[in-house]
Every structure is written in C-alpha cells, then in structure tokens.
Amino acid sequence: TRSEDASRLKSRMGSYAAPFPDKQVVQPVIAEDSKSRSRMGFNHPELAKMLCPVKYLVDYLKDPAETNKKIQSGSLKVTAALWPAYLYPGDKPGQDFDPDDIIEGLFRGYLLER
Image (cartoon, rainbow, N blue to C red; front, side):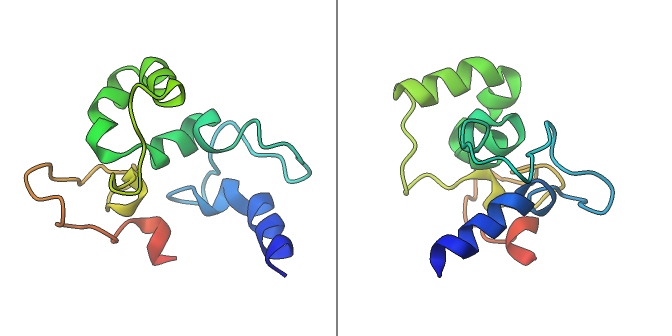
C-alpha cells in the first residue's frame, strides 16, 4: 500500500537525500525509528535546502534561519510554480541553477536520477 511505501522511504530518507550516500547521510541524521515528522521537510536543515524554491535559494544560503522563518510564516510563498532546488543539478541542491535560464538543468538533480 501507499502508506507502507511512504514509511519505508521515510526511514531511508537520510541516505536517499544525501548527494553521496555511500560516504555520508544528511545531517542531523533522520532516525530510522522516528515516527515524528518534526525533523522533516522545512524543519530539517538539509531537507529544507533541497525543498527551498530556487527563487529564494541565494537568500536561504545567506541566512537559512531567516529565510526558513519567512517561508514558514507565509511571507515567502512556496507554490507548485516555484521549482525546488533539488530539481536542479549540482552536488548541493540548486548549485548549478542559472537564474537567466530556469529551464536549463531542470529535472537533472541527483535525487531524480536515482
């Protein structure tokens, strides 16, 4: 079932989301036995960087806490029309994003190639 698939993915997210999972998982580590979502999504520093729309990525990299606060409060909107950083190539999410050509590299992020 879908819920079983999702629970399996959650327990492996730390290694799946890492650019080089054979070397290091995302930090802080996502515990395999964690039932809580409190350290997932925008609440996790590495996952938040991946989910951050590339439109806000420069600001996020300068001040992650402030940008995340604005995203969570709704003053910076996260919509389906704003592509998340993980969709673009680079060892770090959105690293190779070209703001002058948002289509270049789209859907070539390492997470999608797995």
